[in-house]
Amino acid sequence: MPPLPAERNEAMREFLARAGWGKADSIPLPGDASTRRYIRLRLGDRAALLMDQPQSAETPAASSGATPDERRALGYNAVARLAGADCARFVAAANYLRSKGLSAPEIYAHDAAQGFVLIEDLGDDLFADVLRRGADEPALYAAAAEVLAKLHADAAPNVLPPDKDLHVYDETALLAEVDLLTEWFFPVALGRKADTAESEEHRHLWRLALAPHLRAPPVFVHRDYHAQNLLWLPARGGVARVGLIDFQDAVAGAKAYDLVSLIEDARRDVAPAVGEGAAGIYLKNMREQGTALDADAFAAEMAAFAAQRNAKIVGIFARLFRRDAKPRYLTYLPRVWSYLGRDLQHPALAALKSWYDRAVPHEARGVPRHEGV
Image (cartoon, rainbow, N blue to C red):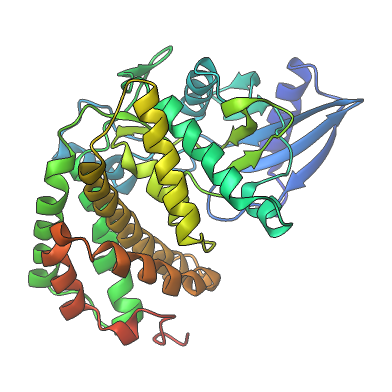
């Protein structure tokens, strides 16, 4: 990890001093696919994490009232409703989740203008790590599904207090995400750009597939709800046993989205029985709390958003390779394509399945062999 510029380092020291942590020992944590840094702090028997997110590092999200054309003019973050480098949005989302009894980190201090947030240290026991050490996979996934049911007991708020609009995960954002596949994966895997007709048909078919699922009242969507963003906190009780991080890109969207993020994890294989069990727990809890869902309609929604998310991930991982020189993400593509192929088996997605079968040969869905890979 490169050293901080002197000016930024001094600003960090001043922030920590104001927060009462100026004499803390610090241990930088490794980062990867974002412009954020995390630094673990120790002060006697107290622990905390410092989030360092320069506010100019990424294009900000557009306002909720921006038109699709205005969002496109601002760039991908605005189109896809990503938070950019907005620390105040992270703080607002954390406080909202905690108000629901969930284990988002407590915010100890923040300076949103400069991009420093001092937060509770929830430890190192990511689901991904404790599962590698032999933890009970069905139990952890059931607990994560219970969190989602608890979160979905209420409709999404329009505003995360005090003043952050919770953007709607709308058609414009969802289509911009699947466009990543034709924009970035085609050149990497097929050695050519997608032509205009291919891209337009792809977008049109996705518009048709998603339309039935964009009419229901939205819920709070974490957006990256998977084993590397969940921590196991067994000393806590109930839904508080699941620690939540990396939720700054939260939006108001479909109930199925976070559940499919959990059980179709790009970075680890989830046993089908575990995924089915988690979905069953979610539906059971939704029914018992008075927010029951129609199982068949929800299965169709899960298939649509699982396919959308996996198409997006294919594009993102190709972009991380080609633009950001991070080839390790290509090793995840066979798993993601396997998920996508399974998702497209749903009868409602037959037209999309036909497009993928024509446009992306099965032999191109593994680790790409173009560009020296």
